[in-house]
Length: 96
Image (tube, rainbow, N blue to C red; front, top):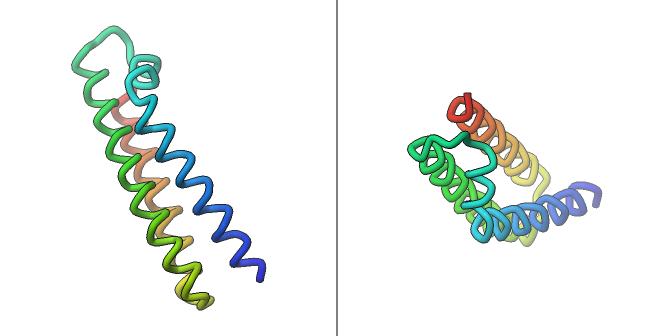
């Protein structure tokens, strides 16, 4: 029961994050980068790519929510955490 609630929250957060990144990737990229236009473009590409990953993970999360199997749910949560860590590392490398 608790895992299903967690899955529902993760899916909702992923959908909101994907929508935000698709809609506001340009100002967010300009805010993170200095005046270097090449760096701004790279950060914006990273943000768009993560938006696509979030959208794909949210669709996958809906399928996992429907399956309702504990092991599959925990593997899905690990995959979401891995995707978040990879995005954080990539973004931090591009910013610095």
